[in-house]
Amino acid sequence: MPTDIVLVAYPDSFRLQEAKSLAESMIGWRVVKVFTQKYLNHSVYGMGSGKAQEVKEFLKESPNVKHVIVDEHLTSKQLFNLEKLTGVKAIDRERLILDIFYSRATTNEAKLQIQLAEIKYEMPRVREIAKMSTGNERPGKGGSGEYVVDVKFRDLKRRMSFIKEKLAEAKSKRELYHQQRMKAGMPIASLVGYTSAGKTTLFNLLTAEHKETSASLFTTLSTTTRSVKVDEKTTVLLTDTIGFISRLPTYMIDAFKSTLEESLAADLILLLVDSSEELEDIRIKYSSCWDVLKELKVDNSKVLVVLSKSDTVDAQKIDEITKDLQLENPIVVSSETGYGVHKLKTAITRYLAARK
Ligand SMILES: Nc1nc2c(ncn2[C@@H]2O[C@H](COP(=O)(O)OP(=O)(O)O)[C@@H](O)[C@H]2O)c(=O)[nH]1
Ligand SMILES: [Mg+2]
Image (cartoon, rainbow, N blue to C red; front, side):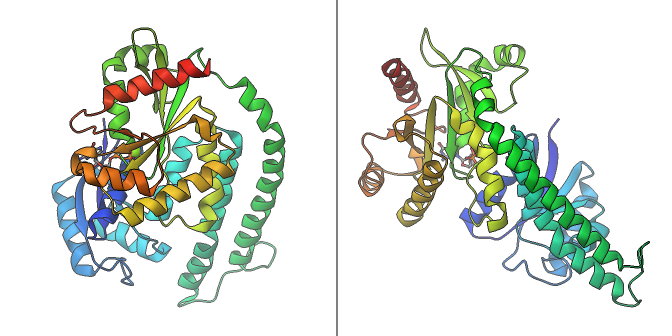
């Protein structure tokens, strides 16, 4: 059963699509309605009060909707106001990203990094809640005579240094973990790329025929890993990874890398590039993908570049991208029409055969 959600996002089509893909990268979440708003910095609800009323009206008619997501940073007060008005849980962009990280984290280290990011998410909110409560009364005293906020702050700081210690331990155990990693005796390929590049769509297309066997055979694997038969003799485990995220707050970068890292230990990495985007954006995103891959010490010989959504562009655009990114024979696919999928499978088989 999917969880229905409502999204409030900026009207710019790329940002909107990204927000939608981001929300839907929570497994089982389905965006059933999108509201757009040019500015999301209104003081009471983030969106304007008129838009908030529209959302409320929509939710009245849609009792199945569980959450309203706003594709922007909101304060505690704004989230509180929105929940009070709509009666459902309100989630801002940063909370959503943290939740996605949590749902994808497989290593201890990644979980700790996310907890650290979460504390950084909470800190300014503690101050804010303090301000909210001192609006009409003096701040209350804690048990030991300190202000409640100071206590809360000290607690967050203590948790932070505790997590940092644990992280140092986790890092030293990491090598061991990689060695013990379960491989189910099959080669593993990971789909990597920006949010909205088309990873999940391609993942679903490639793994569709094998859904049932995968479900029974690999129940111990995460729901984002399934088997794909790339030729008569070869079956590969394919992982749909957490996507790169535009405008990722800096305090989340370590949590992101850590969450992605385990998937990069795959035998083969399929780096998806959305060919429907502007060349300038493609270039920026492509190079920041590589920055992270290099930083996480990914061997570039195991990366195959895949130009996705080829049905949205002409041959000339594909040529331009190929030249601009200096690619050699990129694999060009469309999950919409199925174009290039066979070629992709052949490329995977060839790569794995050559590696042996
Ligand atoms: N036209 C077209 N749209 C696609 C294709 N692949 C994905 N999309 C659309 O692009 C959007 C993002 O896809 P998604 O798979 O969620 O991206 P992810 O964030 O990388 O997992 C969705 O609206 C898809 O329907 C494709 O081959 N052609
Ligand atoms: Mg996805």
